[in-house]
Amino acid sequence: MVKITTICCIGAGYVGGPTMAMIALKCPHIKVTVVDISQPRIDAWNSDELPIYEPGLDEVVKACRGKNLFFSTDVAGAIRESQMIFVSVNTPTKKTGLGSGKAADLTYWESAARTIAAESKDNKIIVEKSTVPVRTAEAIEKVLKRNCSDASVQFDILSNPEFLAEGTAISDLTAPDRVLIGGKIENEAGQAAVDALAEVYANWVPKNQIITANLWSAELSKLAANAFLAQRISSINAMSALCEATGADVAQVAHSIGTDSRIGPKFLNASVGFGGSCFQKDILNLAYICECHGLKEVADYWYSVVGMNDYQKSRFVRRVVSAMFNTIRNKKIAMLGFAFKKDTGDTRETPAIDVGKGLIEDGAQLAIYDPQVKEDQIAYDMEGMMGNITCYKTAKEALQDAHAVTIMTEWDEFKSYDWKEIYDVMQKPAFVFDGRLILDHDHLREIGFIVYALGKPIDPFIKSAEGA
Ligand code: UDX
Ligand code: ADP
Image (cartoon, rainbow, N blue to C red; front, side, top):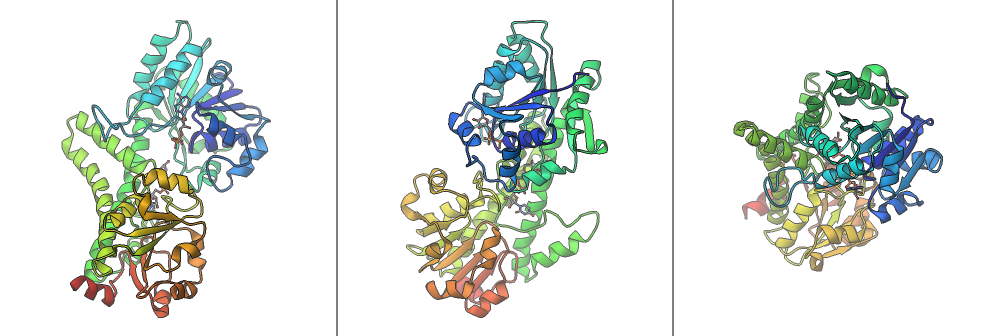
């Protein structure tokens, strides 16, 4: 088995950056180089303002950068000097062509593989970090073998899916539930490659938490894990609609079912919808793979998880409009939070985009505040709609003279605001639409707000407005 002393990672994004920083921290004997084709991204990784906001990441990067952690655009050089190459490039949903809107776009992956093939002069262990369709390793192996000029170079391909969640990446990486390594364990070289990677993680992860599997199982496990997690959210969100219709309280239902040890309490928070770069993309990809194998019923089952998520977002918009007397035209609606979850500045697939678009289609003027999302990102996400949007640097300004406030992200700071003071500067009746169930609704009602809390009994005021 080779002892790994040099690692590089292609792709300095949300996954590659933090993961490599953790490997560098825990393995001072390994030189880790993170490379990317994007010069601004690499410049940011080498600066005091990292390109992603992630609690605890600054400290880890600062502890290793320049010692055994390097960020560079010299992709070829890093490939040549590394024994092990992680590939952590983006794999978005295809926008055109076969499988459009469902299948994973492997353009970036293939291009990375071609560069690896062109630059490799000795044996390499290639580690799939980005989530990929099942059997990608097989396709990549072909690209590597056919494009490498030196036939004696051996590529061992591993699948090592990343399970970290944004906002908690550092703690997830420090103490992962498990590390999964898939490889060709049926042959000696494959097993040796798996062992080499397992040894890297063994520097800080207990051995019994390092699981090995065959390549296809590892690739599928990642898609399955995300599909199961998203399915839990869609299930509790489906319940939230029924709770509103019947007068039950979704938080109480979640608590009651979560105490069943077979169900467990996590990931049962009803919300305006799940977002993030993984859930929707991976489910669509999973369902597409099912379709390709003739498993229509299985595909439809998973598509319905995404369908429920879309329903939840549009249901929220309908509530806002109907509660406000069926007209929000030219009303200032404050949107607190734009990121897809707290403790990140990431807006990929955030429910705030669809909800924002829905509200604007009904004529609203949105006043957006998010502690981490910059205005240019919002302008990118809401292209063509900025005429109806103003971004603010403080919540106070966003709330001034607003008719309503919608909570899109569960940022902790929203809980600590002086809601009485906010009430005083808003138009009356002042509405709160809590899409994350984070505020103290009884307290808000005492102040005078009309409150819609997702999945909770509906206020008589809203009921009568909707009946009107
Ligand atoms: C997810 C997986 O959790 C992680 O293992 C995988 O590696 C990448 O995808 P991430 O998307 O970063 O991670 O965040 P996650 O915490 O899973 O949240 C995803 C979305 O679901 C967020 O929009 C979040 O607000 C929402 N969510 C989560 C709920 O609405 N309710 C919940 O109970 C939990
Ligand atoms: P993730 O959330 O999966 O980490 P990101 O989009 O944040 O995804 O990061 C992927 C990174 O991969 C981007 O910074 C992109 O510039 C980089 N990338 C894509 N293709 C290549 C390539 N062929 N070589 C080097 N870097 C690449």
